[in-house]
Length: 168
Image (cartoon, rainbow, N blue to C red; front, top):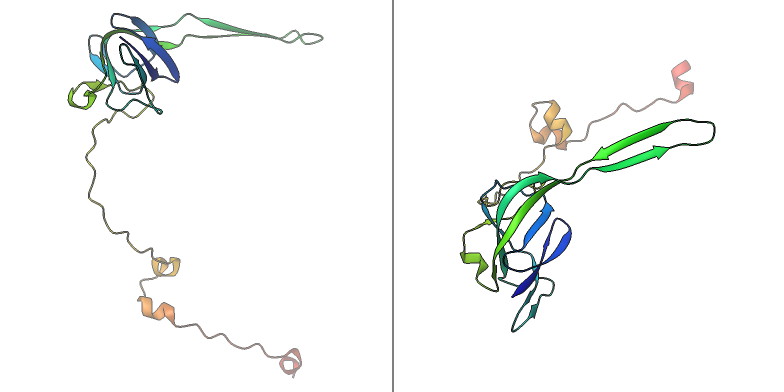
């Protein structure tokens, strides 16, 4: 039996016993994690998801947190400018061993979901009770402590006198 799973923006075809180097997961060595984004479950009766297979999962054991090979990026500007720059990068990876492929019943296992290190750590968050939205106070009410009824009345402005009357 095999499965195609999606994690870290990549897709992997896996079988039980395979060892993968995937994008870093928020898990310690020795923990069991579960991948819930399964695209295909193959075997005697293959199932192709649209886009995911409902209820399918792949369980794996975290072996270690490692770093990938160093990738060197060398920039050299030519002609009259003799500038050079070398940059290096080592990607953080997680080494996992696939233990089991579950074609159905993944919700009832209770195994920790495989979450990348850049995502939020809270997996199970209880929903807060929905509250009615509060009406927004106007800026004038916030500046003064006057009641709202006083704001509703329009303010009277002094009428401008014509320039000829003002000179007399």
